[in-house]
Image 1 (cartoon, rainbow, N blue to C red):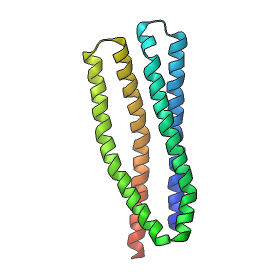
Image 2: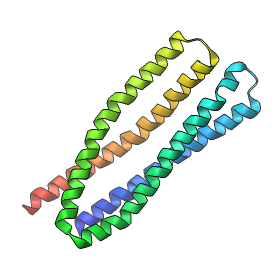
Image 3: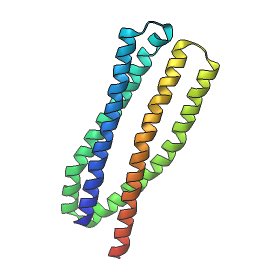
Length: 168
């Protein structure tokens, strides 16, 4: 029963965390609307579309992860009740797989941020500056939220492994 409690607490924390993607999506969408309504300069008008696209991407990520993790809450209990050992093993495998994915994420996103920063330096048009700055902001949001999610899944994986050692 302890494994079900730990898994459920992890999933609830993930559901809470995904709300930050939705919050920042609303910030980006509001900013886009603000630039659309109040933007007078060419650079301000250039931010409308990149902020809108970034907001929609963050909203898609947030809603997708929210419903995925929300459905896990009920799936966990069903899987645990049907086969405790298989549930335990699948959670170890899933958490290790997710940790491997995060290794890639934490290498690719900084490279994308560097690339966007270089675009600011070398391409001096308002639209490319707006795209680059908005991309950097969006990727920083993703890094912050994913950094916390990575720490949670790492702790979850460690707890699972400790439980496995104790049960052997």
